[in-house]
Image 1 (cartoon, rainbow, N blue to C red):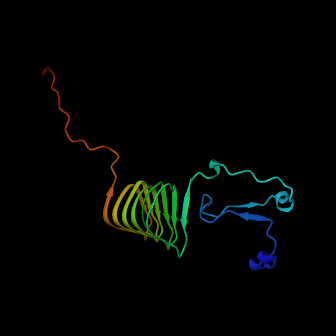
Image 2 (image 1 turned 120 degrees about the vertical axis):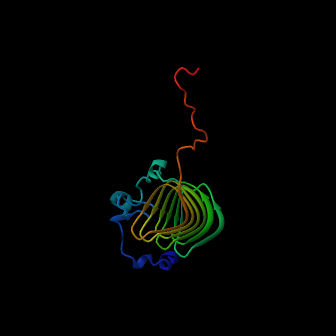
Image 3 (image 1 turned 90 degrees about the vertical axis):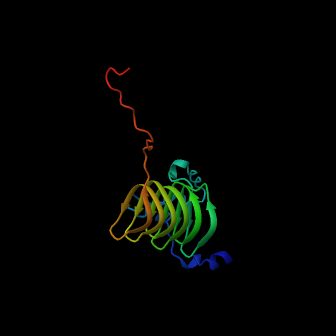
Length: 182
């Protein structure tokens, strides 16, 4: 009873018709929240069988860390995190797969990543091995290395900027043989 009144469950209308997936974690192809009708049997029957456990295929992005708005994460090395979503402020170093910096998010530090998607602000050393995407509201500064780059109109990039070269540099020139010079 105390729990119900504390969380004001008795004041809320019943919400049995729609389940909404978590924000940012389950966005559809056009970055829209995905909704699904709730299963009426599971929602109303207490003796209904439990829902199946989620498998790894349900989460193709792997492990995810979301630093929410008004959260500050400082002085850390982020490891074993496939995707970092920054809505607050992060001062760290990271070697991972994906970093997404939201419009009001700020990342200061060193990042070595496959894909970087910047809507907010990044300052420091950024290596995007595959792709760097800077949206219209994005600001990137520092030592920047990238495989491919996409900058929307309005996006800004400044500093020591260079493309990663997938081909190894050749240090010597091949020797040309002339016919009959053996």
